[in-house]
Length: 237
Ligand SMILES: Nc1ncnc2c1ncn2[C@@H]1O[C@H](COP(=O)(O)OP(=O)(O)OP(=O)(O)O)[C@@H](O)[C@H]1O
Ligand SMILES: [Mg+2]
Image (cartoon, rainbow, N blue to C red; front, side, top):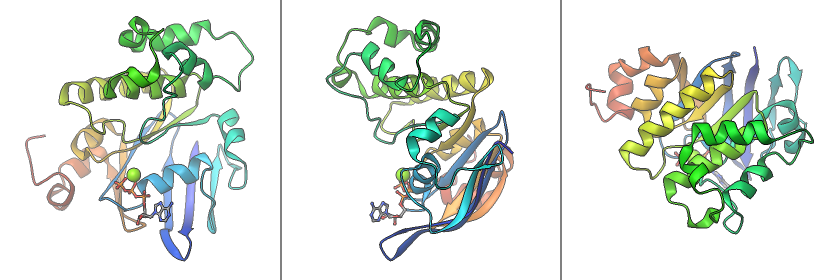
């Protein structure tokens, strides 16, 4: 297994945000986490990227226990998160933001800049524009592009579709698929459950800090109880 989240519990003060969550991500997969507000999706990703400590359980990358490894070292091991709320540096240009994503690297970056600009031509056109002046969708593209500059094996995405127009959401999901086809494994958190399940090989449903279901994306997409709870009962997706 490439990434194993093994029975982790995470507390904010005395309150348990995660109560023993286990998620497996195999090499090459797209795995989605879905669930209501406050279910623990963001906390799970933050714990995987090293921004939150666990009180119980373990996280393993290619069998190596990384539970106590600091976040920046996890980036070097191949885990990289595009943060919720995007986190673009507003005063830096698009190009400078991309270089920031590669701060751990000392090798030639041109090929990866080109790759990001090929995935996101919109960013190429705006390479000298300040990050803070990009539209919401463009900032999301930049956040994903910047994460790719670290050459991740596993890309962690927290709500990449948040606040975007339907057409831009489609584009972002299409690009996540392309990135995956280029060999990057993806762990994705989404409110937009129907599109996430359509894209994901497998998915986990979180409820108040626990995994309550896991199955293939397709199976969950057509599951009546999942549809009623997370897809607004809409069967047309
Ligand atoms: N810094 C914090 N301090 C205290 N409680 C927190 C903190 N961050 C998250 N929580 C709590 O932990 C629980 C899980 O939050 P989390 O952000 O992981 O949920 P989520 O599934 O990502 O929700 P959403 O869909 O709204 O983004 C929530 O009850 C939340 O209030
Ligand atoms: Mg969240």
